[in-house]
Image (cartoon, rainbow, N blue to C red; front, top):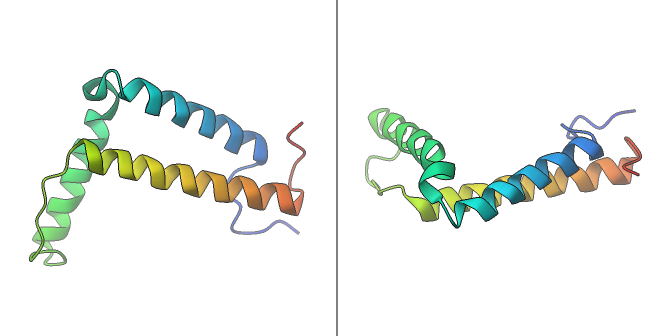
Length: 94
C-alpha cells in the first residue's frame, strides 16, 4: 500500500533536493535572478491575506530573508518526503 503522505518517489525527491540546492547556492551570488519571482509571489500572497483581513495587524516587508526561509521549508518538506519514501520502500533509489 502506498502512503498518501508520499508525494514524490525517492528518485524524484533526490532530484528536487539537488535542484533546490543548486538554486540556494546560486542565489547567494545572484539573489535577484534566482529569488525575485519567489519574493513577488510571497508579497502578493501576503497582500491577499491582508486584504482578506487575516493578517491586518502584522504587515511585514518581504525580502531575501523570508524567501530563504521558504526555501528552507521546502527543503525540510522534501527531506521528510524522502524519508517516508525510503522507509515505506516506495522505490529503490539506487
